[in-house]
Length: 117
Image (cartoon, rainbow, N blue to C red; front, side, top):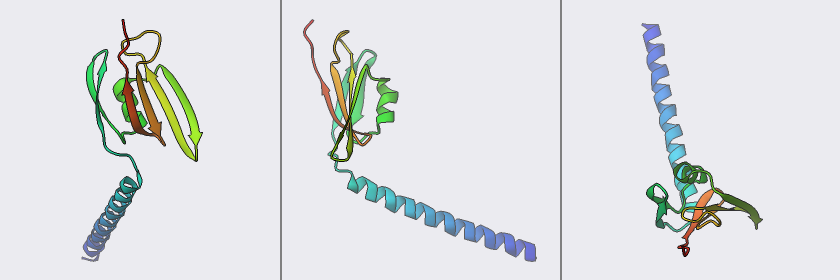
């Protein structure tokens, strides 16, 4: 009987601790989202394989999974923020016609250019 009570008490304590950790993670995640000052924009990007949708605030790694590694890449440090500019050659073989700007690892701006043939 004592063993059963010990198991039951351990189970209840585990459930309470799990719920507490989940609550703390939810509050932290909400505060993180509020701290990010990135307006929400959606972009439909024409790629070689079709059209994809990107959203401001997306992590850089997620964008790279969708589009692949960029053809050009530059990094800057501006007022303590890491700015990264990635270029993709979608319809041009010489210069990037899709430019992405990331701030602190999150997509900030998208610019797709139509180049003359």
